[in-house]
Amino acid sequence: MQKVTLSQLNCSEKRFNELNAMFEKRFGRRPSRWFSAPGRSEICGNHTDHNRGKVMAAAVDLDVIAAVEPTDDGIVTVKSVGHEENRVDINELSVSESEKNTSTALVRGVLAGFKARGYKIGGFNAYTHSDVLKGSGLSSSAAFEVLIGTVLSGLYNGGEVSPVEIAKTAQFAENAYFGKPSGLMDQMASSVGGFTKIDFEDPEKPIIEAVPLDLSAHGLSLCIIDTKGSHADLTPDYAAIPAEMKAAAAFFGKECLRKVSKGEIVANIPVLRKSVGDRAVLRALHFADENLRVDELADAIKREDIGAFLSVIDRSGESSYKYLQNVYSCSSPDEQGVSLAIYLAKSLLDGEGAARVHGGGFAGTVQAFVPKHRLESFISGMESVFGEGSCHVLNVRPFGGVEVAP
Image 1: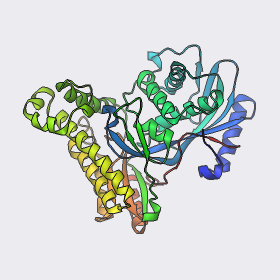
Image 2: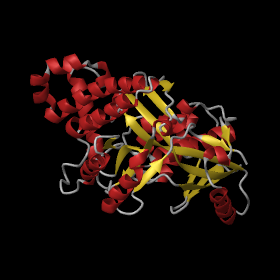
Image 3: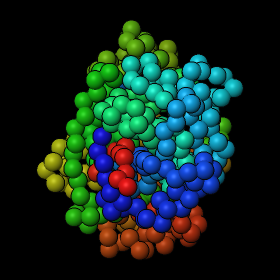
Image 4: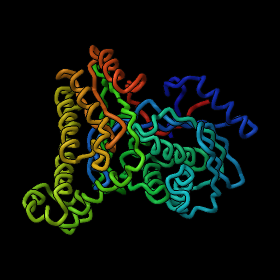
């Protein structure tokens, strides 16, 4: 496991000192270890990972940090700033229906996943602080899961558990214990770090390729605009996307769309739409095209063709809007903050940069690549509608889950 300093982490000493003080107040002693896991921004490959597709993602410089002390009592106690304490006995790792949709479920799930994969587990006390915006599409839950896995790797496995294994365990916790049917992209991007292309054709052995890109060197800033939309009651909207894609795949006798060609989908549209419905067909077509766009985006980055890079981002966003249909919920048509933010962003960019729905969609955030000479007016314009502090300028973090050097 990589160890980094505070300066490498781009994190203030004050933040860690405050966390240490809170740890000492709660647990009666100073912590001895510190860990960090980042949020992530999906760049391309919108809703493809759960059907074994391709994605491009980047870790960002908003993270969850933890002050930690191992214990010998077999109890994991995690207190997070602003949240109730989680307490899990490492000898009681069965799924609990009453814990679904809670942080305790994530902790228990990661412990169970580590044990099932043959890794060592043990007790520890942890106090955590997150500056990953909740509900922002930056995957605060994945960062938390990866953090717990990184702690277990560092404390009990000599830091030798690979980022891929930590990500798989984190996804297992979210699927089986938390109850959210997510793909693997969020956890993988947080665990691996940097700009990363990931091919999930074989989910047990995903192909990971680092694709370095210095946005600043090309005069661009990555902005995430929080439209302040609520994610409450949207789980059915999210769950319908993988379900409909897999229903389309099942028509061909396959378990996922990665095993179905675009040609097969197109050739069977008349009968397919009667079998699974028009929206499922459109989502299947989005999947097929989005996989190609991920390859196209990676090639543009390698050629340092920023014009092509931005074009792919825009086309991916347009496909999400029209065909994937995850920009607003059909059950709440009056709430279309993401649609409005995309319109405003493109108006403010005036033909430059790119803007698209960010992450899972339906509510929450928009991603924009903004030329530096437009950044000030872009922030001002977006915040005049969505409120002060709604437009966040982020940097790409070159590493994933790490231990922080004392």
